[in-house]
Image (cartoon, rainbow, N blue to C red; front, side, top):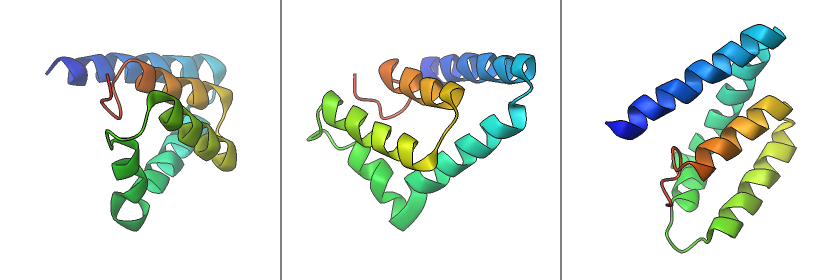
Length: 93
């Protein structure tokens, strides 16, 4: 599975950044919080973000709003946006 191996490479890179910056715990907390928000109300947000009716701009706007509300670290913000842009999450490419 190409996306699975690519996702693993991105995850390893994120861990390496966290180790370099001594922020692994913060990154873990950020990603757990983001995952929890995606799964609230029977995965409603995730389902919405993968709905083909939404445009890429609308998905970005929703993600930016969630990221802002969760006060995610800049590294986590960039990681989530990168995953979206590279079609690792929300598979909208």
